[in-house]
Length: 93
Image 1 (spheres, helix red, strand yellow):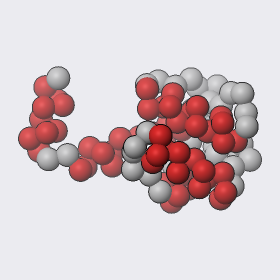
Image 2: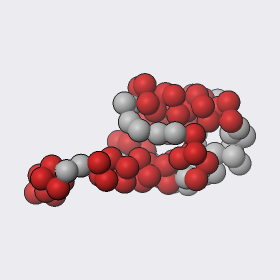
Image 3: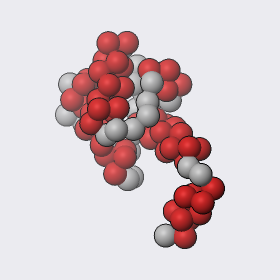
């Protein structure tokens, strides 16, 4: 079982555990193999938007059905929205 590697993965793992009703979820486990379905997916996406204030839609979860995959997709989405000047500031930090 793969543990969260960063804060985003840890936050997503907590949301998934609560929504799916499991004590532990590996970051490499497939949402659908864990019993996930559209209603749980909507709950997860809604909580990501509300609790974490991050961009996420149900198709993102379908295309990236692991915590690691979804975290990477969210991070890429955020990075693509940065202006070149802002992105440079993050690279320098």
